[in-house]
Image (cartoon, rainbow, N blue to C red; front, side, top):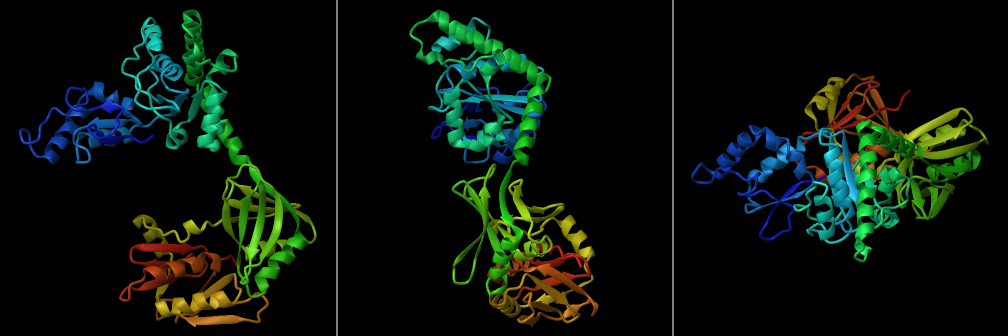
Amino acid sequence: MITTVVNKKYDEYDVYIGRGSKWGNPFKIGEHGTRKEVIAKYKLHIMAQPNLMGSLHELLGKKLGCFCAPLPCHGDVLIELIHGLRYDMNVLILCHGNIYRSPACESFLKKELVRNKGVHIESAGFSKPNRKAAKGMREALGKLNHNLNEHRSRTVTKEMLHAADLIVYMDNGNLKRIMAIDPEVRWKCICLAQYIKENRIPDPAFLKNDSYEFNTIVEKIRRATGVLANAIKKKEDIKMVEKKRKKKKKQEATGGANSKELLGLLEGVHLNGTIDECVLQIEGGKGSIQAVDMSNSLCVCCEGSVEGMEEGHHGLINIGTICKFLDGVGDDEIKVSIRGGKQLSLKAKKLEVRTTLLSPDEIPTAVSKSGVKEKLLEQAEGSFSISSAAIKEIVYCHSLIPVNSAVFYESRGYIFAKSPDGDQEFNVRLGKADNIEAETSVEVYTTYLIPILKHLLQQKEDDEKILVHMNNSKPLIISYRDNLWAITPIAN
């Protein structure tokens, strides 16, 4: 849930935090110091107010209105403190307009869980924002000592759905609207009515002056919310949501294929001057492993039904990894599955191979944390420099020769690669070495290496060095400026 500060003159807001509200800054610019100084004083002021610190959760996910934004102001302090809050559970309550059922449920639930500081509760709807709670609901809850006068409607967003641990809705119409925003959150949605063994909480907006029916609906909300509150206190719903989450994670995208046929197709594109990567593609309810050769002809390697994965999902897979596995399982039928949306698994009998799907957006990913960099560099024996000309030569050779791995070796710094059948090879000298033993070599998959080299070609300045750090059986490290790319070596 994102909390933001807006200028109340020009933008809609949920909570006013200027002077006159409990969140106002008592310190004035000029009288009490510069803008920076009065903001610093406000931070000390609010941190010394237990009542205000205890009420910060009221601002979570809200638009805070003041007169300063976009200039720095005390609202930035509030956001900083809000981001420091930690909740065991975030509950989002939804109804159509956020002026009848969901604000009533929110008020009842907050009162039930007033002592449960680890639970954050908010409500929203699918209609216009910044509307008051309906008059009939304000009056009905007023008789039950609940005050909805300060409530203003909010429109639910995808970000709010993602941030919630539990989404409570009122009827199937609400659920359809949730699914239209993001079907991936279905697993954490619960209908409030189920707590009183019914299938919906009717919308009072459609009643025609029927006070009895209106009060009946309010009573249903109150009773159902009481049961929900007890479940949250016992962490039953937290356990239920966690169970659903784990179940969702176990869902796999599956497909079947004969290993001999699959091997033939993969080797066909792998050995005949084409590529060393193929693509997993999810489209039209089907999943397939595909490879495209240099002439752009498509080779479908396996296909099957898909569950639990987004339409249009794709990822790069190293063909060499798959070919080695398929060559060892004969003509057996294999199962192709995707775990956690990221890991490809091939199974045949008791054998299994797993390889991570590589998204083009994720390659290259540089290591930037100093502690991690130092630890990686400690493992390196030495380094050698690599020029732009050498990188261009490697990338060019790789486009001509279908290799799936490359070996960095010897004290002068070379990269060597050849096609699996040995009829084509390239050997590129990289640069002068520093403290690398002559026997040192590291073999890595080109799936990881080539995208990094292409990235560096785009980034490199003429006067800046690219270094390759290596040691036997240790990660190969490419460093440039303040970033490192660590590539796990292929096991001997």
